[in-house]
Image (tube, rainbow, N blue to C red; front, side):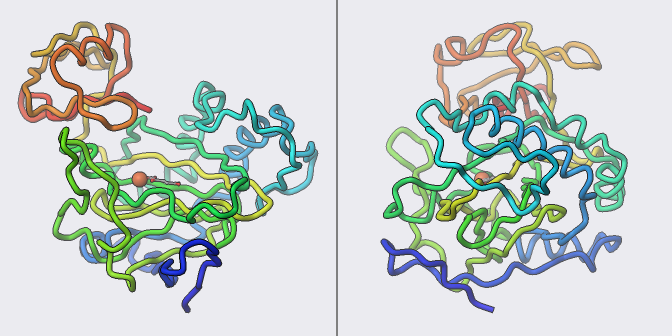
Amino acid sequence: MATQLNDVSAPSFPVTQELKTHNHLIGDKAALDAAWEQDGYWFFRDVLDKGAVARLRQSWIDELEKQKVIEPVGDAPTDKSVLYNGGSLETYPFRMEPIAAKRPWPAFVAEKPINDFFTRLFQDDPFWVPIVEYRATPPQQDKNKPRIDAIHQDGPFSPGLPFRICWIPLAEIDAEIGGLMLAEGMASGRESYHPKTENGSNGPIPLEAIPADRWRRTTYQAGDVLLMNLWTPHTGLTNQSDRFRLSMDHRVMAKGDDCPLVGMIEEITESHVSVRDSSGQHRLSIDPQTYVRNTVGQKLNGDEITAFYKAGSEVIIAFDGDRASVVRPPH
Ligand SMILES: O=C(O)CCC(=O)C(=O)O
Ligand SMILES: [Fe+2]
């Protein structure tokens, strides 16, 4: 079924098709792996315990009430998302720092049905990489802005960190509300579609770089989960509804994968980093090819590294032997 998203300003906006669902592959590791390569994602419909998702969603609802941008919901169900009341967005925390500060994700992934689902999926314990975005996107104020936020792949921004993006809708997200749109079948070559800019950063992927018939989305519901290959081009869609768009994107791996170090920096220079995690202290070398990055994905070189990273900062490090391949902050 094709859905033409109603965009006024981009007549070339692609026609999107429904995401596949991969529920029937759970338990069949070979088939899951094949779909991961071919489709570039797994979409599981109605697999996450709705009570656990509702408890997670409550952190978003509390914050929206506090910001006075929704009416107090009391006992009303919030799984269809909540109406924006037109309150001022002047001081609205667009990156949801107040939710990030409360760290609601560890309690969520520790809920038994959630942990059980991912354990059954991976046939291994999940390892949650603490890279989490909390999104509570209000209705877009400028209705003439293009619907596409920025087409990107996460891979080129985290080379050597082989996690799966885990995107979780917290309430219904229909075509008007927006949500995630991805390009199916473009991940198997592990190819970057990002044009390199002069300073070696990744420029945005132009819409023309993706064949127009690849775009997929669906009406997402609380209980669904979308896992996405690092090489799958995707974008958020702007919110053209009168409701909030609530979602969380997280990163997950299986314990048996090449998991990164997650710890606290003890010392950092341009050529090495010492980090402490629950298993002790680790010292890794940094060289000019190490992708040391800041919160917006830019590569840091030379003394930019020590200007950004300090002893005591939480850090995620992918490594190969005793060499760091990626050093990045959680956010
Ligand atoms: O939710 C969005 O708008 C974008 C999410 C995203 O890019 C990601 O999870 O990697
Ligand atoms: Fe992304």
